[in-house]
Image 1 (cartoon, rainbow, N blue to C red):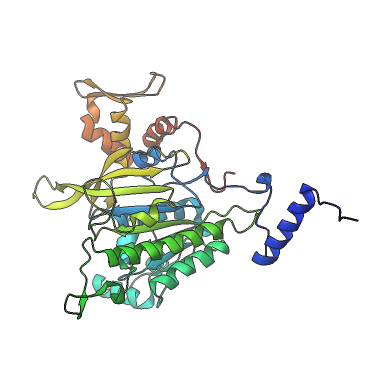
Image 2: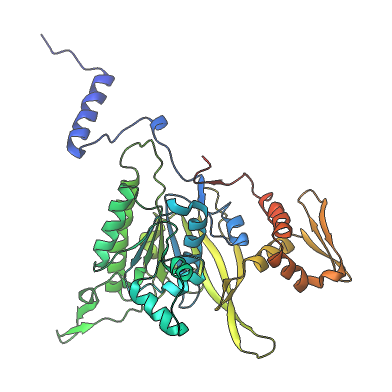
Length: 400
């Protein structure tokens, strides 16, 4: 007597059992059991950019910051980390992964990202000031908001695997990898010359350089995506990774220059920014250079991010990004901060109603910006108009 033919449910159950046995977990689950984190946002704290991001970067994704040297990539990464700290306080855990060089803690703190100083660094601070630090000052330099950890003594490959492992453990909300271009070894840049001798390959458009970066990043990104979707969880996996991509090679990329690692990043990243240095900013009295304009451009965006949005923000070496000026310029560009002539300005909501009028006694544009810097209530009115421009109210971690 022939064996009874299995129905579709039994066959599917057998397949599921085999797959679970092979991978040690379920690999097919109901759609209702899977929750994505992309609607939750990680803001940068820069009004114009956050508006283009619909409240900030989607959580649980890989973000690429690319650009030439001194374009502002690290500054924006630290600015974002500082905003995350202010929002999540003690729950803000950040992992810093320096593939090349060391993290400049002083620069990071200038961007609002508080990284605790070591005892040696405290001693240097006292030497710089020429006096002992007070207890309050020591607390300021040492007391963390949330955890800030570094990867040390690891190869590029080990660093990337650590990011994957900690992603699976939900240990950090934000990881910053600096940078893609350092993720190669000298062996990857060797080739046989015409005489048979081993030669070092320059980084400019050479295939070995490209293959190495693409292979390393492709492997990491594939593991990161799989780690995030390892199994349905009651808690959303919100680990966000910022990958800083220092432009050093003539590889396929964006705009007027080429970006190393772009091929591997292309299919897995969900947001990408190109940062470009703009004109110098000079002190009017001394004519000394005190900063420069940073141009940003979103070259890839999903989950509500406005692709191809562009903007500019002033960056001062002593204080960082000028957030208040950016708030003013963002609303002015959208004709919601309107100059009525004679030094008079109106703040207008998106319905065309006047929210606040400012007379010439404020001191024109410069005086109005200074008022917004100093007066939290006035600044709140402008932020209220800015927030009304979002298509939907942004959702942040802790709001859900």
